[in-house]
Amino acid sequence: MANYVDKSCIKIGSSSIARNWLFAPATYLVDSFTPFVEEIYLPVVATEPGSIKFTFYANGVANPPVKKYFSKIKSLYYQKDKLLTQQHDNVYLDLRAYSPGNLSHSIMIHLPLALTARAYLLSIKEQAPTLIFPTNLPAYVHKLFVEIGFELLITDQKVVGKLCEYEVSSVVSIRSILPDIIKDLLLGSDFSKELLRRSEALPKKVFISRKDTRRLTNEAEVEEVLKQDGYQKIYMEDYDILDQVAMVSLADSIVAIHGAALGPLVFRSLFDIKPLKFVEIFTPAHMANVYRVLTYQLGGKWIGVRGKLWPKLVEQAYECESSIVRQYSLLDFEVCLLSLEKALNNFESPSVG
Image (cartoon, rainbow, N blue to C red; front, side):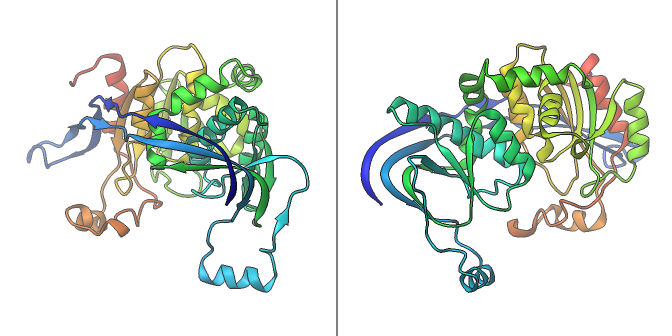
């Protein structure tokens, strides 16, 4: 890398997230005579501190991520990795790492990097960055970034020219300031106005279910319980990406199975609306704090519901290698209706805590 021009650093602090309730299925593990819903008071968690460093180069080279062995051999055979030289005067930001094809990743990792890089470049009198993404980028992620106001270059080749490089201590640390980045750099934008316009025709109490993986085996029963409380079942893939973002970011109440479709929650920071009520349903094979943390940052109320265990999960629950602890995370599972109802009732008249 040559011709260093300028650099900037964003320091990221840590903050604590309050305790929350998680309701697990009714079992005889609480009382050997009568099954009770398990009420688990989750511990305080802290967001991760870190930093994001940007460096601008007048002449740089953006290399694609290292390929796996067989993919690398195949790409060499077809000569797909020859140098791609850009003749125009764009500044490039390479966002091909960290799985941008995952909607939640693209919103919670790549978007804040793009927004803060744009702010940095404009502060040194450079133009906004053209974002480099891989050729397997889903069309809906492509559309989302274009609607937010970015130009994209889709390629798996090397790119030369003006380059804005970033160094992030940990992508997880970005979550600590994610809502602030979105609010500071997108508030009042045409994008936020379009979300508000679209939300007018969308439901405000939604049950986000799944079609392909991590499905509920008793979905019909869950839907019936939620319908009585005014929730409308939706599958996110049935909607345009902007409708997905508008629905999640502007809903009053959400019940959803944990997954990437919940990434758009972060855009809620753009709007002055009442606090979100959010019940997050987990397969016991994949537990995570990401949306619990985000809901707290947004001033909403989060309650978790964990599905029923099955024998293989019991075997690994007490001792398991970290590399395989989520090996069953995409399997279908059943949720206990009693624990779901308890979560819903807790919003109106908290009986725990």
